[in-house]
Image 1 (cartoon, rainbow, N blue to C red):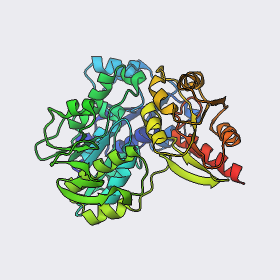
Image 2 (image 1 turned 60 degrees about the horizontal axis):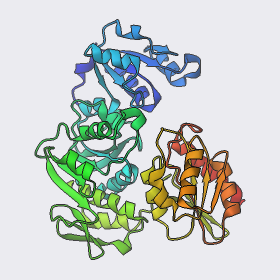
Image 3 (image 1 turned 120 degrees about the vertical axis):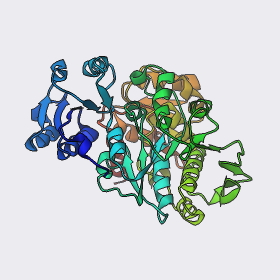
Length: 451
């Protein structure tokens, strides 16, 4: 890590635990800061809080009292999921107390350069591809952020010969001040998380913080096919590296005559790429562009693209039962991701969808639903998705209790040659703690069905 004396004797409030708050609290405590931890979960149910308390850290659980701001507070490290409408956050802003997220803390401490990847969809796949492409390069890649280990844990062991590849959300980026990646990748922008940001414009501006501190030596890898992304990138400093499925740009990554090119170099025949789906071609172009900017070899990139079949919970092949293929796409937490997953298949699709109701309609899903054979819905958005399916003219629509129940119903509706696809188009938090939990339940139900 860089010089860490800047945190000694600072008074820091960590607001909210989970992975990021827990890691930030331990790190700041080890750097001799005066840390106060505040989490909404009661202490008796909060194993993380108990562990921090055992280290001598002051812990206040069960509520978010405004009195926490009455003592000396130099800055707040906020869990990304806590909205800026939280009373403590609002009051801190009024008092000009800096409110940051854990990724900002990590960037302040890192000796290694960072690659930051954001967008509404495709972050995890692109991050994983990029890490694999950078292996055997001049700098050893480390993965951090939402996809793996919390960033402020990774930076503790990162050296200048490393490069940290991190998936970053709008929630994290909104809480940054000096965050400065060497390469900033912006994949796409879709109407998502509007319950948190209020408008698509605010959502986009939060993500655009990825560019805020770049200089002329840095790289901006952006989707030239997404007008919103192009607009947000237009005035940012750095070397602009576009990627596109439809436009040839000699400075970026693009498709030509069935091949992937980067700055005029023929990288690979798309028929040799294992990862399925048009949407994944965008992720591949972005990863190729970022990898080449960081010195990855074409041979390594080719090796990855001819072997990498996808990440867990992202159009993940599970198994085949009686000539019916089952795919887990639980990470599809919005409509755009679900549309992309549906379009990846030529076979008849039985779609399992539903989850947290964020207040949006599913009209944008209707065109994709016109190509599916059946829809099985569960969760808070059940009725909305059923309405969209009816509008799309889907022949078979059924209600299920949860993802596991949906598997059983889908199998009963299916015929040989069908694809059963869990691609919820919704967050999981109405019934599950995480999309991973939802995906694992789906996989377990499929395995039970096979037995």
